[in-house]
Image 1 (cartoon, helix red, strand yellow):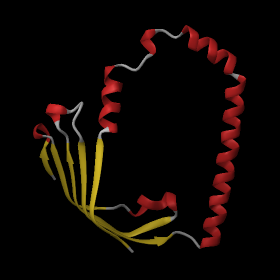
Image 2 (cartoon, one colour; image 1 turned 30 degrees about the horizontal axis):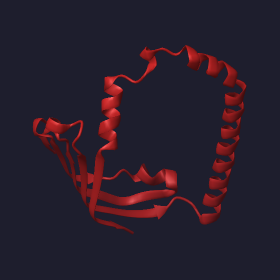
Image 3 (cartoon, one colour; image 1 turned 90 degrees about the horizontal axis):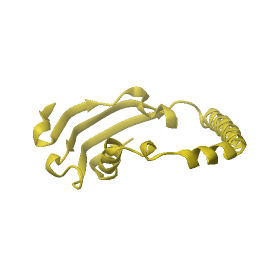
Image 4 (cartoon, one colour; image 1 turned 180 degrees about the vertical axis):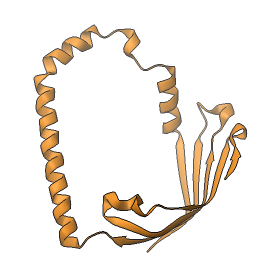
Length: 137
């Protein structure tokens, strides 16, 4: 760990990747590491400058969590559940539409995002991620 926050630089060396990092997509990380993770924030021009995230020497060795048939069944089940939930949300939104229209008409200037939210959104939109020397097996 090399810390230079005042200068806008944060470096992490030789990071290990957790075995469960890729569980959501059906894989287990047998071995994984990141040689260098560097984050540069231009504090002098934080609102207009680019935040740069550099990842060097990224290596993953992965294995499947389940057989393809089991994985396909789980994916289909999760997709079906997500679709049912989305339908429920849409039905609720349609039921509440007249009330939301009235609430929106009553909304005041104070409900708009503040300076902090705008500032954070601007920084997130200005992030550049560079990956160099990555391998997976």
